Image (cartoon, rainbow, N blue to C red; front, side, top):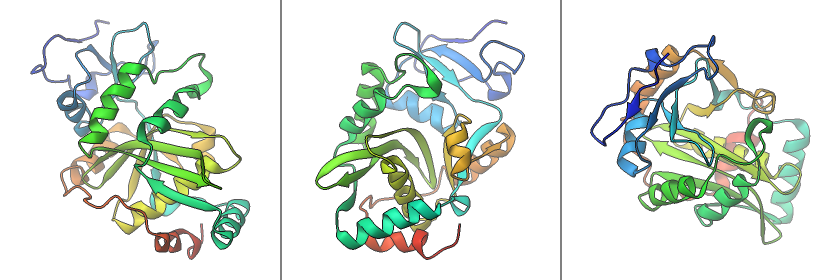
Length: 248
């Protein structure tokens, strides 16, 4: 099966329906080549396509079917995590910050291999590309600071009323979960109903994630990606009420 190659910036992505299927060695693979410039990334994410490749590979573009997603209303806040959040908030030891250390978050995520892989897919080229997108207000980090140190966080892409989660890291128990809980609270505050998680993992399933067929994911995408972008990416402590005053 021939893989389409992107040879110039104006070349459109293939239809995602032509992505390699489950009977191939790379299910969900759509195309290869091209660049990671902001314009190409925007074209990709508007179609539900994302880059994922290792250091010595060409740029590979993916649209998995099914897709792992987290509906923000389905987020599971465990009893232990609720207790941790409550204790930290009362003691003022834990602080959520947004976009204060974007590239550092990416660097920490790069040290956490995806899916048990050896090495990382968050190469210097990826860090530079998403760093540029962050400077344009399209990519964001949610950071967990405890006792003045950043011990967990995540980063992703925001388009309209969609958030595309890319990766997370934790240097302390529950630090990445706290960042995810904060993201969910932020999304609920701003009317974002779904967070794209890309790959199916047991960890995300335990937090309320589930799979969605490509056709249903793309339908949701088309309905929400062109809505106005969120202008204010500041985090207010009152947003915790979206999580702590609801039952998971």
